[in-house]
Image (tube, rainbow, N blue to C red; front, side):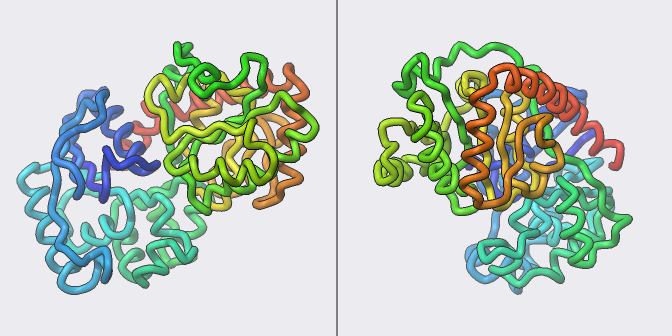
Length: 372
């Protein structure tokens, strides 16, 4: 089968949606399908492990400012996309971002089945979301409702779609996945040596760019509380822009026990997960976090906030702990509790590996094709 993945930005731009598309494309290629990723950023595969081809399609200037569904972009872009897909002649289209890609496909009506996956930015009512920026609810609902299936990554994503007016029968829940076997193989990367952390230190790891939704300020405040009781605890932040947290750490008196890195990938990132003692994700908004699933695949006990997607796979006392959004004290208590009990963390880690195996990309990719 020939599959077209239609998305907005793509690698080398780094984000959760970009990696979801990358992993789906690789998984479908491994199944024997011909896969091509169509995006507006890159005309070649930039990931060293890519098994698929990549093609760029143009986006008229001004769309980002005025709205992808408004004239002239709402008229021109479907024509451009239609011509692009016609040349490739796919048997199935998997679109990512209900707005704008799902909106454009609804106008194209390509005559072949297409699925639309929402990644969060187009669903959230938050001021930074696409709905607030472009007032695109009607266009978003039209794109999702006319698809073969609107893919919801979590239970909350389904509820948000239904609240918008997408027919419940059109929505299919399929979570994100992880390369589970990769995270179970030992990585040679030495996290403590790379970041100058003492060998006997306990490491609490967070992986996410610096953004208000990731609540690194809450994680840092919780670390300051934990560090007052335990001198052996280091907090590590990995992600774009996290260097800015160092000044805040110094102001809290824990600058000497906070390390940051702008980004690791491949086996280096796998090693970082494997060598952490506890993984923390204190986000105030997620749809379904890739990094949380990666940490679980590496066998880490996790602490996460009670937000979409995270509560779908993490049960208190079984896989780690979930805490109220923004609650510094609860987050600090959960971290201290896990750091104090090696046996508990090990048992949780084994259960988390089992969760990750059930979410292996090979399984997730197959669920998409069962719809298409």
